[in-house]
Image 1 (cartoon, helix red, strand yellow):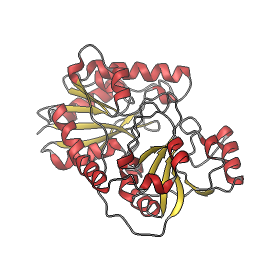
Image 2 (cartoon, rainbow, N blue to C red; image 1 turned 120 degrees about the vertical axis):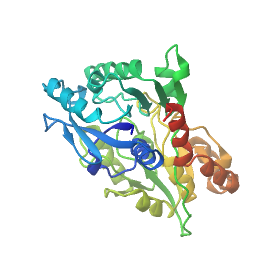
Image 3 (cartoon, helix red, strand yellow; image 1 turned 120 degrees about the horizontal axis):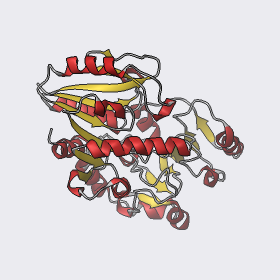
Image 4 (spheres, rainbow, N blue to C red; image 1 turned 90 degrees about the vertical axis):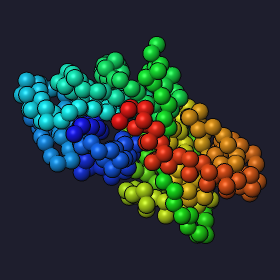
Length: 339
């Protein structure tokens, strides 16, 4: 039997939102005859831990500095575990745990690039790019969730690169009396142009950060004082979908900067499913498409809700959703990797 290791970051039992990397894990686990294990990193444990569905490695990458770990013992235990399998495939979905490449060199490596990873200070960015280049160099195939990321990381051998955007699930829209607008996202001042929202009478569903500090807190106070309602409770995808069906429009307030340039928001499928008009500011991977109801905020201000909603073609929305389900998208990724 072959083995697939998904380098996914957080502990499997800590995952609350089904991000792209988790969808990859679930799809391969259910659609291959290979054993699929999630791999995470821990700064607490100095030894490798094996579970039925997960391997937890000591964390030794840029996030917490290069902490000393016993590489010899980790390599010995990992080799003993992997030798039971005919072939080992390792899929990186982020830059953590790049040292694993040196521990199982006979493996097939793949990289799913779905984030620009420009968080933190300059030193952090340099270390992130160093880890990423190592993964790219050693990867047989690479998938990119956006054209921007593809253009940033591709090298001369472009045959091993492919743009495979994220997918979504088809849901039955709920018929509810709808309010005007809702803003979806966490209050991350680097990603979102929150200053544009101060005069918008709406509700923000905040998730991600539990504690707001610095500029985020200042803007939050301004927004709250301007009449915006906040929900600080974590919502699952199912709960969020039910909430979205209460609104006419949803705003994705991404900034036009390096933090957001490579983002193709997975939220787009939930938003289309719910029947809202999708409004956005910055030049993210989204392109204005009136038939799908994906609209620049400046266009919305010029023409208004009723005019633009009449431009939406429901059959086009249904077709878009059916052509971009997670099963369809991840089958492409599976074929690209040769799994």
